[in-house]
Image (cartoon, rainbow, N blue to C red; front, side, top):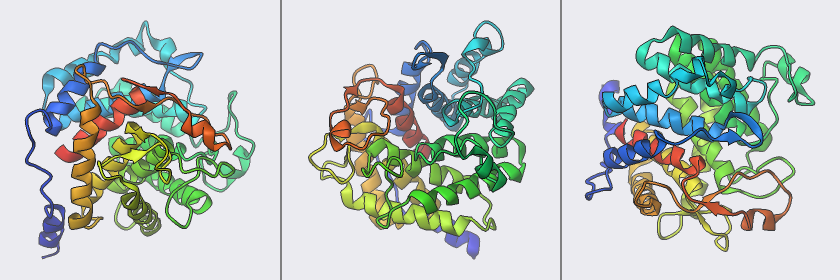
Length: 360
């Protein structure tokens, strides 16, 4: 009976049917094919791979698996092979959240094809995140955080709760070692307690009082990514679910009439922004599919978000109106005036995540 109820909850909303060109299968193929030939994206002036490319790569690998597309899966795996040889200098040192998330891709490759080289690389990175602080990016409270069972890379930027969650969840999925997912859950609770506001949204950092779209998107994706794999009996699960549902309720209120969200979530005067929209849509789709959110309420909103989002893809599957990389600044105009780009991996990645959530 319990299984029947669970299955009925997950099947309570049918996201289709899809018009030609709008299905997650078609969109996923287009965005994956856009990704495959592109050169590596460096992280600023640092000659290592950018986290946004890693996020897109993870999305493409997951799409290939879910769609049972062996040809694209082979191409995506082969794209990683040079990291063991001539492109090894592109591998970042796991001393910062934006660098350590690199391990999510080799771990996904291991999950799909059992390449032990990829397991060793990815798990090493996941372990380093909770190891001894080292390198050039040690946070001021690193020792204190580590003593309290948190990552020494903790810095209380909302971006972190995708970056940390992703590598640790992937390490758990690859190995079955609950240590990884349990410490990710503890980290998530700490961020919720420190950063979530009564309305469920998050400032970019504790001293920057603006609800930036993509920043909140990292949290909106990080929570369901964690909850998808977190065991039902984990003591931190109820607190994370509470924070997730609270955030979703407020996001629902701020979705505009077209199905999109804006650069500042509570700022209708700010521009429509696609990467945040994709992230929030992913969070809605996943919540409905998993039975965590009311299907009658969030299902239509998720479908509306997807159908609006994909209209921003150009003929080559580059997503338009993507806010460029954005550091925290206590200045509203800083967020209002951030440039927008086309084809930025910050936007390509969550489009793939949405396609995957619809296929999953």
